[in-house]
Amino acid sequence: MNQRRQQASGIADLGLANRPSTERAELLSTRSVYDQSGTRELEKFGPLGRIDLVQDLTSGGTTLVAAHTSVLARGWTSKRYEEGRPQDAVGTSNQITSTKEAAQVREHPAVMADAQTTMVAKGHLLVLVGHRHRHRRLPRTSPVGGPAVHQGPARPRPRPLPGRPARPTRAR
Image 1 (cartoon, one colour):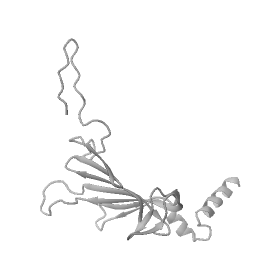
Image 2: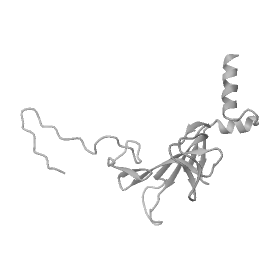
Image 3: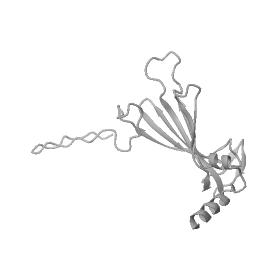
């Protein structure tokens, strides 16, 4: 019985107590949106929860919700494929070139909140966070055949063989 009260309290906190069960189920589930062929995942929405905004939620220069405000939102991931690729290009297709991760505020569903964009172009990973960005070199191959996020250095540093002096390295 106690667990049922906690669930009811959580649903009430999210403003879902008076909503139909189908709407509650949709808002508390994870949903993916695919293209017409069903091969490319275009967007993914996570379950509804309460978050604190890091940045102001703005649209067209108007602040809709101030930063540090607690709002109801879902995780929102948007994927783009082959941006900037020529139409007559030959080779692999269906490669993700950018991913934008954000929150979808319930009161403003068309505006991405606290967005972070990750772009992959010609073997480089570019993570854009507001006006700041980080740039990292990706490995030439990926274990799963697509672009991979690489956390360490691009190449391991050479180690000298036992009994041999280390080679001098060039300054970069």
